[in-house]
Every structure is written in structure tokens, then in C-alpha cells.
Image (cartoon, rainbow, N blue to C red; front, side):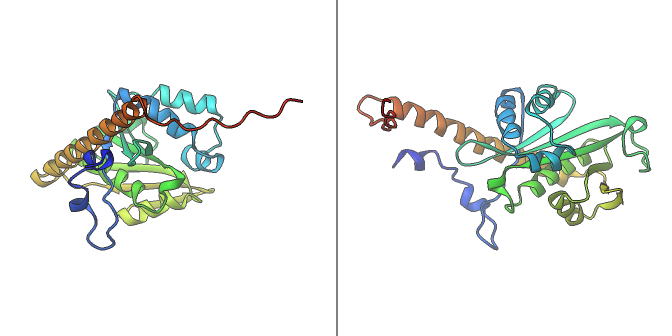
Length: 237
């Protein structure tokens, strides 16, 4: 058994979509230990992607401040890791009292509403990462007595518009921007179990990928392993 096969997720094939055979996207709740990889993810976004995610092309300094100020005890942050243990998608679910929320026009009897923002690496576009992050955020809201999920983005943000339409959200457009709202059903035993099972599978997958990365690093440091040749030095003038 080779080293890569040793750390493959045994449930990956079972979790694959029956239609196209595409691997299922596993969404995991992120914590403080993931902040460094979150920083890499956001700083790797191109200017056009930052415009869609934040509404403006934020410089690196402001992007770093955004990541550093994320409060894991207040908000829910979700992520998707690829097979190389690289964070390729991040969903930020922020909660606010309804009287201080940007979703002023939404009628709710609940104390809070939630706002969702998502970013996906260019290499993972069209793989359903954004939709899965949104679904995970929606079920968490549903299970925590929040009945209104809100998204604000540019009208030109095709990814967010696709997610909103697919989820059946009510979309309001104004001056090149769009607000989308989704009214959520009350929780039930099925929704509670669904969220718990999704997190367990994602955590198992995360652990395997973390161990695989650590094993590969150790493997490359073993005596006798061939090191990658260094590029030749430029000729002296």
C-alpha cells in the first residue's frame, strides 16, 4: 500500500454523486487553528474575485485585517479543503440583532438574522463548493432559531446570483447591487441529524488530509530521499 492510498478517505467513493461521479464536497466548521490557511486563501484571491467577495478590490492589508478580526466564538466560519489540504472555499456566516442588520426590510419575529458571504478559489469554480457552503450555513441557521438568511453582493456576481436562485431566495436589485433573502423552516430531528453527520464526515476527511500532509513532509525528510534539484545559478557577469 502506497503512502497516498494509506490516507485516502474510505468514504469518498460512497459519498460521490451518483449522477456524474463527481466527489461530494465536504464542508467543515473552521476554528482558530485554520486562520493561517484562511489568510492564504483570501490573499490568493485575484482583484476581480476580491471585488465580487467584498464589493471592492481590497488591498492585502485590509484583507488581512478582515481575516484577523473574524470572531469564531460569535460567527460560524465554514471551509472546504482539497486533497492537498489547501483551503479552497470559505463561507462566513455572521449574526446580528434584527434591528442592527442590513436586512431591514425582512420581517421576522426572531431576535437575529444572519448574513452569508462566500469565496471560492479559481481552481474549484463550477464544482459546487459555493452551493455546499451556503447549504451548510442555511441548515445551521435553521437549527439555531434563525429564520432569515441574507446575502448582499454585486448584481454582476454570477456565482452568488446562481446560489441565490438555486436556493429559491428572494432577490432585490438596486443600483448594481443585490440583496437576497431566504426564509428558513423551523428545525426538526432530521435537520439536526443532518448537520451533525455532515460535520462528522468533514472532520474525518480533514483529519485524514492533515495526517497525509504531515506524513508526506516526514517522508521527504527521510535519509536517502532524493531532493528536488535546485535551479542553476545565473552565469556570472
